[in-house]
Amino acid sequence: MLKVSRRPGGEPEIFHSIQGEGVSMGVPSVFLRLATCNLSCRWCDTKYTWDWQNFDYQTEVVELDAAEIKRRIQAFNCSHVVITGGEPMLQQAELTPLVESLAAEGFTFEVETNGTIVPLPGMLQHIGQWNVSPKLRTSGNPSEQSQIPPALETFAKLPEAYFKFVMTGESDVDEVCALRDRYELPADRVLLMPEGRTPDALEKKSPWLSEACLKNGFRFTTRLHIILWGDERGR
Image (tube, rainbow, N blue to C red; front, side, top):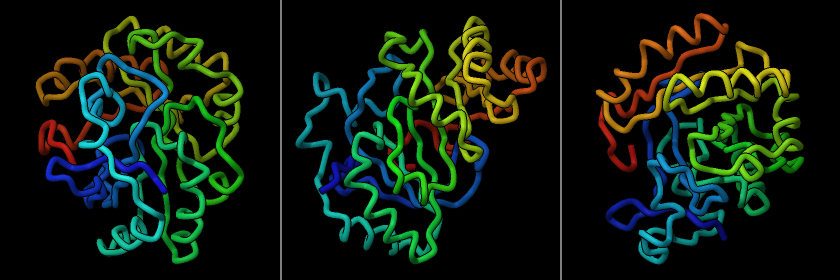
């Protein structure tokens, strides 16, 4: 059984939209949002997947077997799946058979992860793109919890892994550069994304952030779904 986040009406948060962030921004995708997380970012916009002091687990989470999740994904007639959270890698042992089954039918996958957990061989075999988002000090997580060297070293060696950093202020750039140097991350696989839950917040951060990308050879990504629909759950 997999722990899946619920939409506001109670249905599992499995939905069809476009990828709003990263190198595949704009690609039509089926999103599977899994619940629970091993970090607690102060600016997280999906706290309903893990913050059980402020959200009710029974209201926000439904447990589904792989067959039911597969049926719901297949119903959208879209063969690209984005697995997100929460932190989906907490459930990778249960997730792997689902991925293997869908991959056999021609589905392709991205996984959104905080980069703290080393992938199992079955996941490495079938995931075509890893969107790794190591958390910086401004996330509020202690670095010994949010930056796990064996996991980051593993992702750094994967050509299909991209490193997407949530940027709250200009001081974050130095920390990103230090991580780039420590893990020898290719600049063209490093993306800087403004933190923000409104189009106005994204717009205010984008000018200095795009300049930082130009200076360091990084990629810039915005949050297209926020610009299009605002902070709407399930979009």
